[in-house]
Image 1 (tube, rainbow, N blue to C red):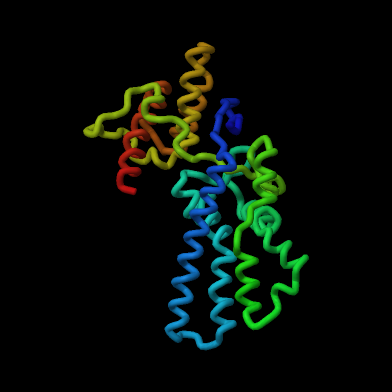
Image 2: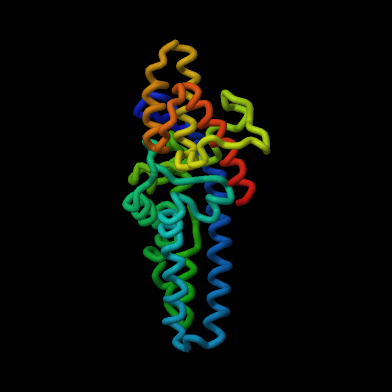
Length: 266
């Protein structure tokens, strides 16, 4: 299943959507991260930095509550689980999710994922007693993604309720093309990039360049190539007088080489 997005140059980009299964797996990895943090925080507070039990628990739970919006805002639509599984939250029009989108979909996790909230509403007596605060924390933070899973299964774009309201989707953010898919042969290790600031462009930019070059062969029109070359020269501050088609091919080759080196470092 793919998200189809048209660029300003009327180029179609197809972004692979994450299915419900891989999204649940991502959520499980995030849960492990949160549990590890919770256990580590409990151990730190047990040492005796803060003697007040309720204050300690609040200081532990606040970071857990803000885990998703903070990670997705600071990490370009990703959490630890999404990063490990190559997933990313974006808007349904292909643009980056805004802070407002991220907060909205986070708030609606209460419906999608935190089914424990409904247990709190319908079975309030469970949260009375000497360990009521701990019991409440478990119900509030234990993910039971029943509603979200049903929504993703019946949504055309695999969206939970929060995604539908915020107009966001989760995509598989591996590069939308492989090195072998480019119009040029993948650069050798000893390849010397011509434009070393090419990483100012994104994967999506390079994918647009590749599609424009491919489509120009079919349509025999070079206007899109000229327009895209002008835009690329402006963004990368290229002053050399290079034929537009050669420039775009060079940018793809440079990007492939430098992006591959960057991935190897990471």
